[in-house]
Image 1 (tube, rainbow, N blue to C red):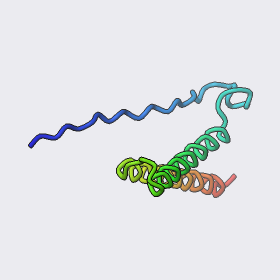
Image 2 (image 1 turned 60 degrees about the vertical axis):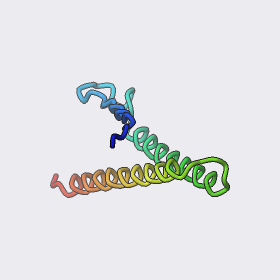
Image 3 (image 1 turned 45 degrees about the horizontal axis):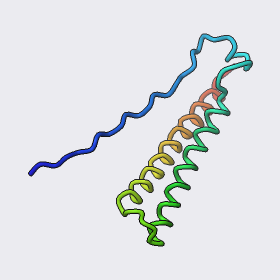
Length: 102
């Protein structure tokens, strides 16, 4: 019994700006933390809304199959969980910096 497996597309790497650049330290260029956080929130929200739309289409019988609906829901849940863990790490790092003596 042989099964064909579909290829899994690789995850695109995240572009990390160089730390030695003076323009990023002064805020005159580069990507700000606010922008990165906003893009992450927007990505999680778009995955959630896409999953909600797929569930609505499935429940109304508009042709969405069950497998893709469940996959979209699970993908949205995983993206949210990953974002939540990153947020927890950022908050923990902030708290650690605030505990440092000056």
